[in-house]
Length: 125
Image (cartoon, rainbow, N blue to C red; front, side):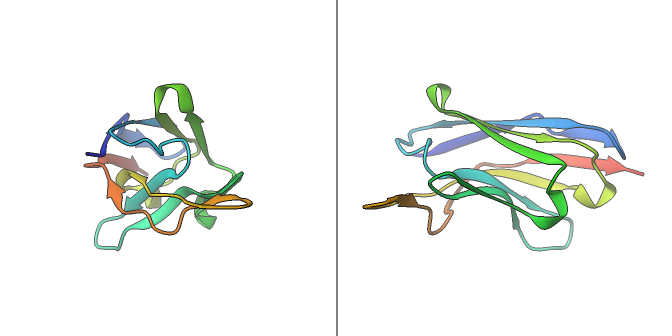
């Protein structure tokens, strides 16, 4: 059974930083398709930083240059460094995973279907 456990959320003022971490267990493909999603209040969940395929990480336009995704394959851990936070970054942040589809060229991640319980990030102005 896939388990994704997030940590590192909290409350900061605008311009501050937070680092989210996620540890995956029961998932043999954690070094292929993992990422971060978020759900702002009253809005739908959206991808923040996700692995699309070999060597490709997709960032939400509004976080480009401010958020950085990193992965530690040996420990099945992924992180999201969030700098220059804005009030509109307030959301529940979820670690996510997908089953990769392997091709002759590598792999791609068609759909993220596993999600952790989420961690709250609140940015005040």
